[in-house]
Length: 277
Ligand code: ADP
Ligand code: MG
Image: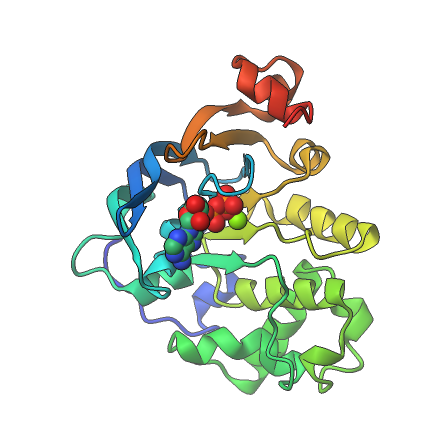
């Protein structure tokens, strides 16, 4: 469908496990510039529904820029210009007439540093995206949605008796899971995660990896990670980005994660996944 559907969380749609379901996300010939500085050069990648795609590669090769382009987040921070297309189930999210708010509802984002609203209650944190997206919910609908999203994020049992506490009172790992719950509340079709565990301890990291494994059938997941073991544990397919000697970032190799780690086709991939740079 091309029309923006009015939605309420207690309508029939809400009873579906997910709004419109997980979608294929495809970048086609995406190039990006900051002023004269070209940082991505014709990057094409399909991130299939019901899979986890990992983006790996050294710092500065354009992974975060690419991720932001995938949900038009870069338009918020200004500066980048862009060529190419981003297709969500075949529809270009940059088409004139398609709204940026729709792209950002359908394609959620979780950042390296957990960013809940610190003074807002856990309950209201989970629901914070609804109002922004014009989604209405009854009191019961809201209660159900908070429980469902916190459960999916693996946080419900820990916080169900203190939903009125502020987001800032949680540990870092709990805050990140709260951010995942907040992303899920608007029923995204794709969830982008930019190094979601880099600021977390190993136990919290494992909890988030478990959450990713459980979510993969209901939302397409794209995760940037510097942790090769994590890429191997959580992802089905993997794309290796590289920007060598001031050239813009490109994808050197992509494909099945196990195959890429066991027998990389490109020597540079082999060097990177084996920690040689
Ligand atoms: P990665 O996430 O792989 O570390 P980034 O996407 O953050 O890479 O950065 C890619 C390149 O774009 C780097 O050279 C970086 O300095 C540049 N860059 C990133 N964000 C901006 C920005 N807001 N303004 C100017 N240059 C930027
Ligand atoms: Mg980055």
